Image 1 (spheres, each protein chain N blue to C red):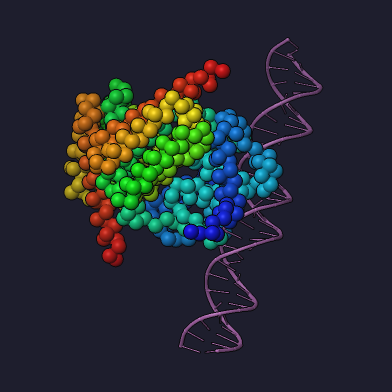
Image 2 (tube, protein in one colour):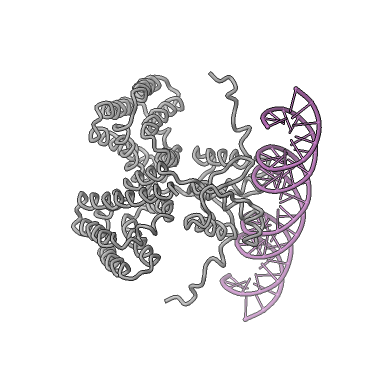
Length: 225
Length: 225
DNA sequence: TATCTGTATCTTGTATACATTATACATGGA
DNA sequence: TCCATGTATAATGTATACAAGATACAGATA
């Protein structure tokens, strides 16, 4: 369709490139909780000056991914079991809102996309590549928030989801869970198709509940080590 | 209790002072939607260099209060009827979540504070000072989100609330609404007291619905001018 | 030995200088 | 008259220089 779709990062201001880079590094665990973010160090590593680094850090601070200590600088925020429960508590409410609104507002095409996404997710679980599965999962959920037509909601849900990317791979890799995940997605799909808010909401809640269990148990494992 | 409670802004980094200043200016309407934020201009006006100005703008950008246009700079975000409906749609869900969690988790002291806050709000409406009423309103809602014990939820609700501070004063000044507001607060209080989630949730929803009506009608008025 | 203090060093906080790009306006040609 | 193009201006994007506070460690003192 568009042969010129090159990497748009080339045209972003450095601060945004740095912001995306650092964020990804934090979310994937390359930068570990508690690790200090020293400006000159990062500037050398990324080959830019301190200015874009600083501006990126300001944004990460507001997103809650780093915490600032005055006159000492920034460090990667710790993720505690409590903070994760807090995030999931909010996300549960917003995911429920999303599917309810989707029931009201989704278009014919949206519904078709959603069905395709369900099938593609199921297909992805047949393969072994966790990142493919993760992408299929993201796409499916994106279709739902897009169907709400609420930009703010989409932004918030995405932000909250990203906070747990680190832990996502674990329950996505766990093959014994795949059938359950497919069924949960199916149930959400059916709920939206039937425009049955109650059913869709319940399914969304269950979906989050299961994620929460999986992630929390993983955190406890990590803590013991 | 603490005689040394001086203005802590003295000790904040300039970027935070600037951030708070600009944010307040936007939320109170001193900086109008569409108005450009030019760095040198602001730097001169506030008597600082461009660096803290830029860092403050990065944070405002992430908060959605300003939008960035590449190589052109920042301007105050426009608030459309659509964007306001989007924000309120999310806030409705989070306010409902807040009161439901408060039903489960509020302490004895919290409940007492809440009752006091209700009374103080009613008292404030007797006076003519809109900012006093607004503060009483903020305090009341703060007690509720605090009762949830969920920091993330608190942060998000506060952020979403702030987006409408500009319009708040209108329905707060409208004396004919005061009795209604007091009754709505009372109903939320009663719901939480009775630990009746359904009742509290319904009251919270009604509270937002009424705000929405009031603010939307005001925006339509402004648009006509 | 323990504690305090002073200093060296490192890091952030702030200001400023330089590079690059967008905008406005004037000038010329169709 | 209208449009295109060039140039001046002004803004942002980036880098660097300078100021000031925090940390660590050595040495002095009790």
